[in-house]
Each structure stands twice: as structure tokens, then as C-alpha cells.
Image: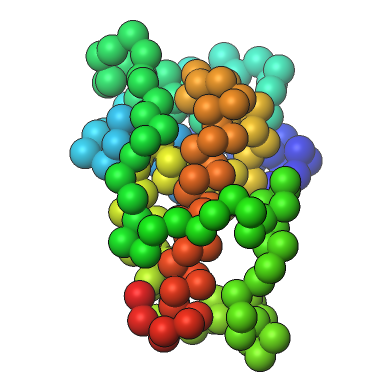
Length: 203
């Protein structure tokens, strides 16, 4: 959504248009849940998002437009989730459980996370073609759900919601180095699943 779209949507919201609220929810619900999930986990994520929407409705007229509407919504969500978490700070565990297929060594990737040596049969099928297969999509989704909550939250916020690393740091109140480690480990597990499926045809 562009800044112009946000401006128009905000005006419609302030005018009390119900369709604008529906559009707001459809546009940002996924990102809000990803933030809540990363902070409080699956059990309380939906409740935290509900808390956030109540706060949005109460405070919309006071939105100062110092940030984008999306950033404002995600900040409210993060605060709602932190209120539910009831602890001073979440510890980032870097020695998490292994994935069922293990992980792939760092030497397989360049500094930006791309393959240096791609899985052996990718000359026949592009990653885009593989991802179009329902079985692989289900397998990758299963892998995503099996990730530790904070890893999954960071991966979703970066890869699906397109947030910058600094935004993720601010929302989750963790350091840039921790965000990088969490994102890297999550990507390795997803890549390991992808390679295993590509080699065996099974999840």
C-alpha cells in the first residue's frame, strides 16, 4: 500500500466508513499476527491482535502521521503483545531444536543468504516451478510452523511482510545481531526442507 493509499484510507477511517475498516483489517491482519506471534507465541497471538485492534479503534483519531499507518499498527500490536507477555524481556535462544532434516552448512550460502551451490536438480526445475507444487507448499508451511516462535516471527516479518531488519528490531526489542541470527537459522531450515524435498520428493 502506497503512502497515498494510506492517506486516503485514513481519511475514510476517520469518517467512520465501515468498508475502510474491513480493508484495513484485510491489509494488515497478517503482519499484525506475525508480530504478535513472534512476541507471545501461537497461544496468545490472536488475543494480542484483538487487543491491538481495540487500541487502534480507540486511538485512530489521535494518529499523528509521524510514521506510516502500517508502522503505527505494528507498534500498537507489539505493545499489546508485550503487555500480555508479562515479562521484562524475552530471551533469544540460539541453540534451538534441530529441524527434522538437520540444517545445511553456512558454506553453501553467500553473505546475503543466496546459494553458492544450488541443490543438484535445480537446472531442471526453477525454485519458482518447485514452489508452485501443492505438496512442496504444504511441506514448507509445515516447516514454518515447526520453527521456534521467534524464528518464525522474524522470518515472516522479513520475507512475507517485507519489513526491514531495523523495523523488526524495534518491534520485537531485540538486537540487530539477534535478528540476523534468527533469520539466518530460519532460512537454513527452510532451505534444508526445500533441498530434501527436491532430492526425495517427500517432506
